[in-house]
Image 1: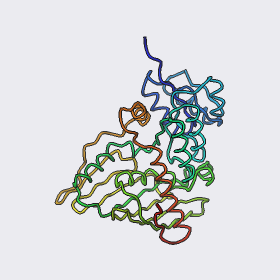
Image 2: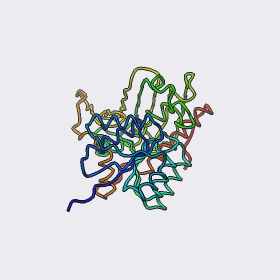
Image 3: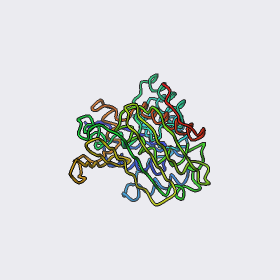
Image 4: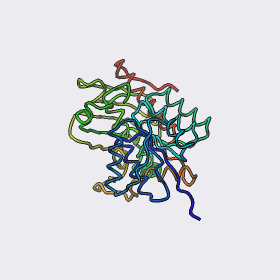
Length: 335
């Protein structure tokens, strides 16, 4: 007798939600999408189009809220993927966990430190499994970079340079991403969060101090940022994010006393330069299907690649950046 497929509720049906839906569909009959939660008619049409492109006629039902789904379904799904606009991440994740669903939560996990701590408290109280969908945290290339640094392959890490840019402003005019109360703090908080999280994953040291400059470029939220700081292990870092230029690119470079590592916002690849040699690729597995890895971690087969504490770490970073930029001074970490 075949086991029942694992059911997953997808909260949201925008760009990232549908990317997760494609990942679920790629897993075949082992997993089924129980429903989508999204009140927007366009989101429903986009989901239906995705199914039509795959010649699938069993489009899951849509609900306006998680509560409506729970009532109609007479209970929770096995898991939930929360990929709604940023300000809804915390309440939606909390509702899913309280309903009994293990949850994969899109990045950035929450808007601020207080929300992060609330999510963690609910996770602990409910005993549900929660992971944040930062691709860099799931990336084999990022894990390999940590291993190479720990093994002394590039000597002592002296400094890190992170550059990322995108035609983010033009792309998002008229969308919820341009509303600070919904999206958070602009390009750095949105696309830039990938690169920042990957940097923090690789270095594995808390930030001791930073100084930030930010410019909205006439928009209601951050578009351009220049940040410099120091990790507690002594390594310096420099971050430049530009959301009003050519389309997306990113490079994270780690400079050691005897080598250099380079990767991207999501990991996905890794390159190394050794003394007297040209930059060369480091063999790494490609980034995995995030939801499939989430299920492996949920089953205890691998450690949780990105627990909620990672989301809290990013929230603390953003708090330091925003405070420094607003006050025009160096912001030092408070334990």
